[in-house]
Length: 242
Image 1 (spheres, rainbow, N blue to C red):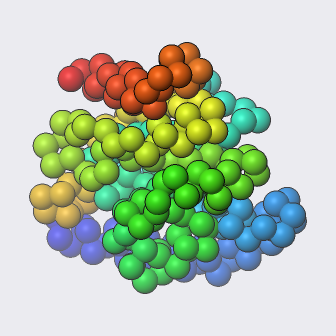
Image 2 (image 1 turned 135 degrees about the vertical axis):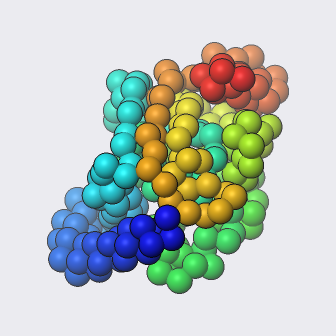
Image 3 (image 1 turned 30 degrees about the vertical axis):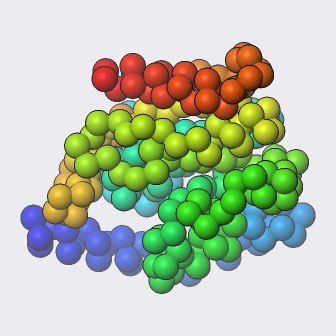
């Protein structure tokens, strides 16, 4: 198993080298034109493409079963919330998020060499250092007006026993503030691919279930974010058979 992991990681490193040597300059140049010179938009698009590239070249080690793609919304920004079981979860984001999506993550990935630099250039948000009320008044409103969607892992941390942890409120406060639909996503199998227990990669089938959007306006105005959070959490628990 250790030998197979060394081979796989070496394979990913070589593929990453050639991706950024050959494909990245073309992708970033074209997307800079499409996004009218906005580097963060272009970098989010590039990161989206890179995540999809890594997963696809990992077949058959990684096999994806995704249902509910019709529930992804067109021509409107929205909030995606997904359960969190593995460090690798963020790389599967391209299968259930729009191409221009800002990701809310904890502080530690920003400290990683290479990965952290691309996250900062893409304008990903350090949820541990961000005052959400100030974010909604400033940067968040600007991103929303530019059509950027948001991706949250509302548990705040990977589940160690695959049981869903209680949700934090950030995703739902943002959704209510900008009246953005919330698209719940259930993802299983990533804990088998990259476990928290031994940090070795193993063959896995990743099941992704994209649920229908939930609109904040469907809930009474009083404590709307709390009611939205409870409802979405219950949907994901039901999807996970909890």
